[in-house]
Amino acid sequence: MPSLTPARSAMLMLLVCVFFWGSVFPLAKMILQEISGLSLVIWRFLLASVCLALYLLARQTRWVKLQPRQFVTLALLGVLGVGGFNLALFEGLPHTDATNAALVMALNPLTTSVLAALMARRWLTGWQWASLLMGLSGVALVITRGDLHLLQQQGVNHGDLLIVLGMFCWSLFVVLSQRVNHWLPSMQFTLLTMVSGSLAIAFFSLFDPTVHPWPELQQLSTHSIWLLVYVSLFGTVVAYLFWNQGAAQLGPAKAALFFNLVPVFAALVGLALGQPLTNVQMGGMLLVIAGLTLPGWLQRQVQNRQAALAAG
Image 1 (cartoon, rainbow, N blue to C red):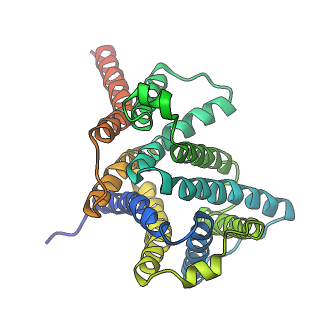
Image 2: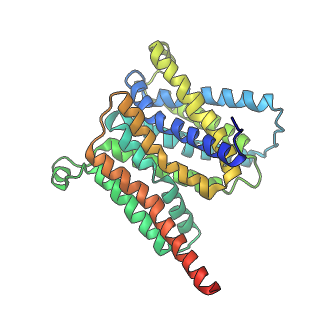
Image 3: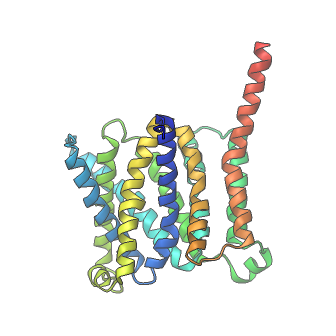
């Protein structure tokens, strides 16, 4: 059998990566039946930090020396990205469907680009507005369950609102992280934000009498412990390494297209685990994916046609 080309190898890594990320939503929902969201964040990222640190040591990675001010910056980013995002996600998941959560998170590349434009004081293009409106329509369809009358009676599910909050935390984290890239390698940055974020959440848990990370870990069933290992190792460390290598080979623009498959894999894994998929969720998924891909595709078609007319 012929060996994979570098491009196909990168595509395969990205496909596996988004499968891991998509599977985290339904699997984490199962773990949260036995452990609190705070404890899950702590153990997921402490375990992931150990695995990533061992990987970097095995590669004999050179560590960049940081100033105290840079450590503070990394700690704050870790609290926002690792702590804020994951805490909102894992606190919201018990109160909503895993597919809903994955659909909301699928808007992350779009909201990241919008936040970046706003922080740079740039106005959105027409294509970006089209993507935003289609994507938000898909999420609104899922959150309202396609029934505005029911929404008026019962209000928005607070689990969905927590997922939306987590998505904005992650988008802001990505935008602010771009200012760190010029003085810190990405893997060292990831490890330090993982450690700082999980330690910050562990500190905050000391003030919550209902959260007991170590006793909760000891009481986990064997099945949930293996799920926690999977979420920490494959859904965090391996997925991150695959994404970095795949994106470096294909480029960030092409790699971003694979992110659209996260809610698809979340829904498929959920179905395999017996978690139902409704018609409203399917409609919302199609709207979100269309919002992320269709305007960009149409823009390229228009640009190609204009270039052809100019050349002809």
